[in-house]
Amino acid sequence: MIHAKRDYSVDRRLVMVSGVALLIGVASTFAAAALLALIHFFTNLFFYQRLSWADVSPARHTLGMGVILVPAIGGLLVGLMARYGSEKIRGHGIPEAMETILFGKSRMSARVAVLKPLSSGIAIGSGGPFGAEGPIIMTGGSLGSLLAQYLHLTAAERKTLLVAGACAGMTAIFATPVAALLLAVELLLFELRPRSLLPVALACAVAGFLRNLVFGPGPLFPLHTDPVSTIAFASCVAAGLMCGVLAALLTLALYRVEDGFHKLPLHWMWWPAIGGVLVGIGGYLEPRALGMGYDVIGDLLNGHLLVAAAIALLTVKAIIWVVALGSGTSGGVLAPLLMLGAGLGTLLAPYLPGGSPSLWALVCMAGVLGSTLGAPLTAIVFAFGLTHDSEALLPLMLTTAVAYGLTTLTLKRSIMTEKIARRGLHIFREYGVDPLERQHVSDLMNSDVIAIDGAMKVADALAHYGDEHDPHRTYPVIGEGRVLGMLDYPTLRKHACSAARCVDVLIPLQPEHVLLPGATARTAAGRMAQLEMGCLPVVQDLGSMHLIGTLSLRDLLGPNRSLIEEETLRERMR
Image 1 (cartoon, rainbow, N blue to C red):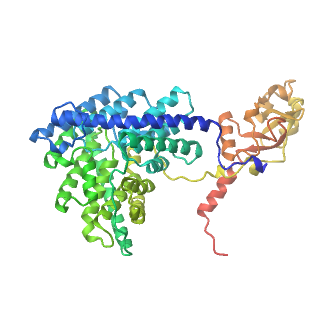
Image 2 (cartoon, rainbow, N blue to C red; image 1 turned 180 degrees about the vertical axis):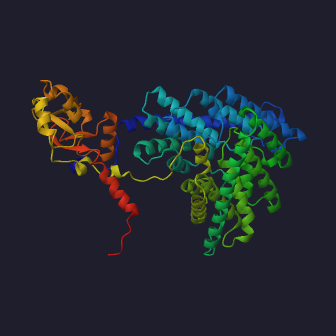
Image 3 (cartoon, rainbow, N blue to C red; image 1 turned 90 degrees about the horizontal axis):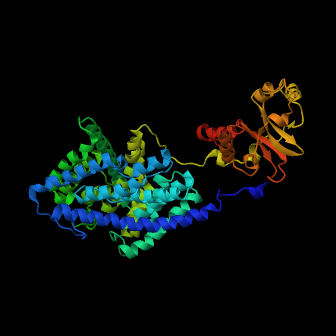
């Protein structure tokens, strides 16, 4: 039955889900615009005491030492919203989305869709050192999940639309649709299938086109670096190692701070306000450390900051970001990591030959981001999407790969999965083709079928089959050339003293419960789990229901045995 086998498991519902994803892409783009507007509004309100939607930096405030209280007030408001609104608005955004996808059947509430952007607008607008990407991932994801729930879609389809909304929102913020799609693959989807990849790609594409209308065209940080020389290979390796070290230090520091907040004899509602005081002190010392800091990233990439000024600014930024995020307030990690990575590149540039100073700021930005998130492909393409600097692609790839390799070897978990692991949930980040997907029912089924005639008396069937075969075995029951159901040994024993026929006591099977030879072994395993049966009949087609074999759980162990041999058996050259 070779003609029945396909490369992908798709059906017509993919068209419907893709159409819904297009709508979600539109909604997430406008949600991103609303989130940025909220951030601008609260920045004006907290730092300049005016009602305005203008894009301003909190660094130009005239509050003096009064600025220390502003982030504390914002943190207190966020704490109150989290306690009396929804605790799910706390945190980075991406770990919460990952947890919802893997352990919450991709169900998000309308309350989160409203409170997350509002709380993030307050947190960032009051000086919180975060980016808007984490909040928009939660907000866009909530829109996708809510629409999927309204349409009564499956959990798998909800996941797809949740991720579509999240990544479309990220595309709208940063104008990086391809990087957003890779973020879905590396962090959110936990699969690489047309049923999920296509809708997410469409949502990101729609958001990318609409962004030009809402925010204007062009990259966020346009940049052009000179071609690198051969010696840049060694410089990229050195830069990658330093990026990996910084990523590891930031991850460890964040969760040490979080542990410290957990030891406080106060309800967690007060933690963001306490963290806000420290943020305010940092903002008083270095005003440009407050807020999203996109302007600082641009200055670092273009070499507009002196090394001494960069050291002071980035030291404060790192401290207040770790403290604020560890306090459990609402904010993202991407923009701060971009700034810290670019700052590291600025500091290393005088000592790294083979490229321009802007190049090292760019590649370190990607290296820190990719190694901290555990998403190297996203970081490489993200850096390119932010700058459109094609000359930097090779250094970006090498630096990010080295940094990612270092953190993979030294850290058990990334900054994203550590938060989830602390809740007693583990996420395995490696993807591979399931061995059960590589085999089909026709490859594993037993063609030497032992079938029971439905008209046979149960006592006769037990006498004929019960003594010579495995007592746990299940037999197909046939009648008039068709499969009628299955009959196991305990059922034969139970009705042995009656005059019943096998057809009267069998486990009935509907046509959709039997297996076709072209189905994957994974489909067969899922069907057995659904029916709680250890053996199913294989039929030639659903029309005739003609029995051609059986497939048991023992048969499904074969592909896994082969995989273990491939992973562990070392062979000599022949």
